[in-house]
Length: 177
Length: 361
Image (tube, rainbow over all chains, first blue to last red; front, side, top):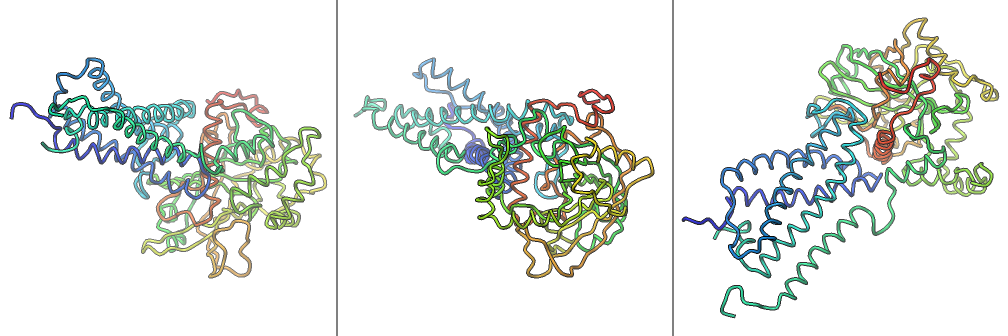
């Protein structure tokens, strides 16, 4: 096999697992700040551990991705789409890494114990500083919204490859050929 | 269509893609509460509080006036039969927190603020942290967050007169007998003349979980060793502006102030998900240790202002009950914390009195 047409199986499994978790996180995030009802407490109890789980998963994924690379894009893909594909993937990886770190960092800066699940408290990664918390708290929301827009673009592009161009790009993350 | 990239009309696939993306956007907007039935968020409550009290940028939206206190909690070991939390093992935990009076005005006169509160972070030797925000009232005026907002709206100052409209309050109380009950309760209970001789209550019920995994519903209170002396409620307006805070600072010069942490176990049939209802009659009460406060500092230099005393920050062995007010308090305190963080902290009444600048040490 000289040319690979698909991503490494670990990448493919992680892609779909993380896609589900990330979408869940974005929905949980906006839902929890929308309510002071009993759901607030339950949702925030999910938000922290899923966020840290994503940080662990993206570390594994990034390592595998750097080691195994990505299949080449179709030769006839217009340069603008190639550039968009490359830039959006860098931004997606950055967002996945940065969002949990900001979440962890902002809880640290606010002086909260970073409770992963009952009985497991993560160490602070930043000093207690309310002004730093203020900045990170805004960043957490702003980047989340941009990240959501990026995901929608990524999804639309993936479906465009699958349904319109039918060029094998979608299959590269979907199945083994 | 022999070629793989043959030019089929892309209209239908593009429509499908647009529909999928649009569906996710609509679901997201619904999850965020921007469409659909209106929700009460932490922001809704903070808005109501800052409308009624006036906006004081950089301060807590409630219990804005305060000062830092510190000392320790000495557990006597009796609490280990109820909860596996380290704080109950015989020994000393760090206790650091804040005395405050109710209301959103950080410069209010102490005589006008009839709610006295004690907030604490109790940190056990191995670092388990327990946060609690307690009031000197055993009960709360409302049972849930929607009622709290309704109560705020019913007592909001009329823009014309600057005073609440009595008709609004009457209409509200007709629907909320629990608030009427609370107002009657407030008339009967004495108002302590010192932070040192007040009893501070957990307000909500919580769960204590012991080492064997058994869960018990409890409330707790800090009961002072100092004897209660009541303020004359008819002369509150004549009290010096910072009376309660000054008095406590003077009181500490005479030595540490102590409270006993008394845990009350719910009887079968006690209401544990509604903070407006008192537990009456005989109850098993356990003295689990002594809180000693021996230091104070203004908020500018003490280590209490930049913390959120979220009552759902609990160590293993203590958990929230089904009282919906706990989740509401957590959400609202968080909003208040975020807002004042973004506004930048202002000078405290007590710090100003001692000539301390608004900047943290």
